[in-house]
Figure 1 (cartoon, rainbow, N blue to C red):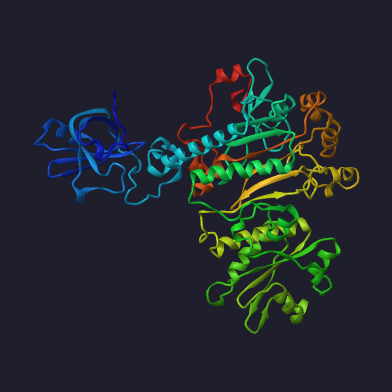
Figure 2: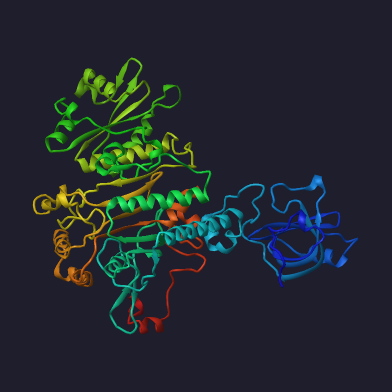
Amino acid sequence: MFRTHTCGELTKSDRGKLVTLAGWVHARRDHGGVIFVDLRDRYGLTQIVANPEMNKQATQALDKVRSEFVIQIKGEVMARPDEMVNKKLSTGEVEVKVNEVVILSEAKTPPFEIDEREKEKIINEDTRIEYRYLDLRRDKKRDTIIMRHKFVKAIRDFLHEQDFIEIETPILTKSTPEGARDYIVPSRLHPGKFYALPQSPQQYKQLLMVAGMDKYFQIARCFRDEDQRGDRQPEFTQLDMEMSFVERDDVLALAENLFTTVIKQLYPHKKFLQEPWPRIPYEEVMLKYGIDKPDLRFHDIMVIQDISDMVADCGFEVFAKAVASGGVIRAMVAPSKNNNQSLSRSQIDELTEKAKKEGAKGLAYIVVEQDGVKSPITKFIGDELAKKIVKKMSAEAGDVIFFAADTKYIAQNVMGAIRNALLKQLEFVENADSDLLAFAFVVDFPLFEEVKNDAGFYAPSHHMFTSPRPEDEHLLAKDPFKVKSWQYDMICNGYEVGGGSIRIHDQELQKKIFELIGFTEQQVAYFAHMLTAFSYGVPPHGGMAPGIDRLVMLLQNEPNIREVMAFPKNQRAEDPMMHAPSEVDDKQLKEAHIEVGSRK
């Protein structure tokens, strides 16, 4: 046996036992010839000791080892003296007096320190990803991966108890025009044809409902060729769920019960801001916060208001034009900092540039002072109206009121971006309780985006399989923008952590949606398998796909999802450890019937 015990297992009750341990040298200390080594495996640390007066050979062997050597030791478990007990370790009451040492593997000096007991080190992220197998030896990273495993296992256990069936769907599938770019895979056996890696198992899980599987789930790998951000990766993992004979509230109740149960089980120190989770209409969330995934830990801070009626006839041309053309005027108060100190002019200029990136022509504002207001727009709206706006917005001295005057679509995007920037700039996010979880469901999304796509067609708000609310179906022929859907998002602390919908199960209605989004006959043909399946009897069904990576990121208080993946890509979608993506040789290209640039 390589080991009789792990390095996190021995306690005082094991005194006198002869044991065999194996692991990595975490740290080595020489105290006047007596060698102490902290031996590490994924279960913990055990201190081992060799005294030259008692065992010269073992001491000489330990004298040769260095950090990250892999060794096996045999020895006797001894109780540590009371003054030497380490209460931070599960094995801190004992040490192992070494009789025999075998060096199983030597190690070069790592590019960064593994031992972080004194202080967590800041290490270049690309270096950590390049040497990820070393990064995962560090306590925090190892514990995160273990917690991710426990999180997924708890999800599986819960769903098995709810009679869900875990079914794997194909990784090599068909490219269909669903939104994000596909990763495509050439077929050697079928020249000129390609598989696609799944963006999600969406179509397969709906077909499983047609098959009568009733309750399906899968811990699914998904692939999307998107630009990278802190909460995105080219490949990611989601909990994919689908159910038959359900309505929206059935799906939401299951999701809330699932994650409330699992989080309380694994993270008892976490607190929920509100139970049951609120269900907020899309129109309300966009008005109040300007985005559909607000951080509700700040639900009562910088709430956006519509003041269109109040300022429509104020004489300020920017406001008047917006209202006359069917737009809106939105306002928000940025609270003062210490001692009623307002935002600086440079800070306001930075926010103005951010507003312009969201489509605004500028950013109007009023600075509230002790004895009045100061603003470039008061010469247009007058002091009296400015003071009325201050009163309506409940602004105080030092506060700054910002305005967006544009189409509803642009105005809400501008105010959402400004509000998010201010939450960080004014240190609300930095000072927030990271153990407070503000879960909610955003419901009643519009079926289509608020503006048409570049080709002049309607763009699905979620995806093309989302069902419109029955009472709005008649509007598909008259005013599709007014159609509400059965889409819903699960949000937490400023992230969308899951999305889903009740699906279309009527073949003719699905064809109508294809028509509205501008699908050609060729594009509709991509989904012939779905339409054919729907002709054989399909139950009403719906589901959800919460993101495992984002949820674990939030629960582990990590800054991005790369920290909760065993082997992530960097921000350039590269794997510096495996040097992927990489070129392949001409033989492989020829077998796959591919010609590449100058290598034709």
